[in-house]
Image (cartoon, rainbow, N blue to C red; front, top):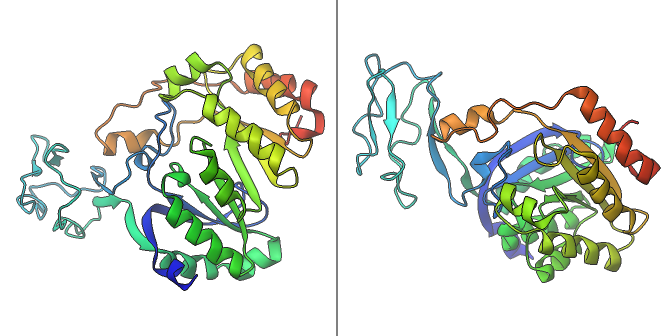
Length: 314
């Protein structure tokens, strides 16, 4: 187990004092890598498995005033743009590079999404909030991306938390081999899974993968571990699953699971839209929105089937 501390993985963010992803106050650790490509993804920096260099032009002083980054890349990935801002050619930027660009920007406009961290480094941050965990019955939540894409790192992290009597939770797409799912579930107090759509074709169209494995994993886990705290979530996305039929189908699936399984609906938001520009990608969802009245109606649809198992206010 001591070798767990030296196990390392790619982390792109750690949030302190989180209260939305598991009981109590949580330390939320985000791991890189995801097999899905959801059009509404609010963490596009989580999708690739390796760190990604980004330039945030709103912080950049301009190449006329600074220019420290221009010419520093041995592959020529950074150059001066016509607007006085650096231009990053992602086809030339290499994961294997020693990254001389890292830390060169005085205004911190250039940085990496993701870094390699050991379990020991992550746990030092988690332990720093231990008093808040204890008082609120909180703990550690591992999210992503998809945490199960780094199973060895995830398992080592959870085992260390378990040894220190820290409550553990994971947020997952459930798109992984069931054996991996089951093995890691042994070290979890809470599992939070998404069900985005019951229709396989619609699911694949909007996420890039079929939903059969996801649904079977959730169904099997609920059967084999009836006392595990399981929360199913659905992000309600305009034009994807914001219909009575789509929500009813998901609620019926949840209704057939163990009575202890809870359900939550999350309203669509655009909070990650600015990250797409930093990654040189267009925001896939455009300007769509979800009216509050429609969200309240759909919550009522789910409540009519699930009652108190629905954790949204209704």
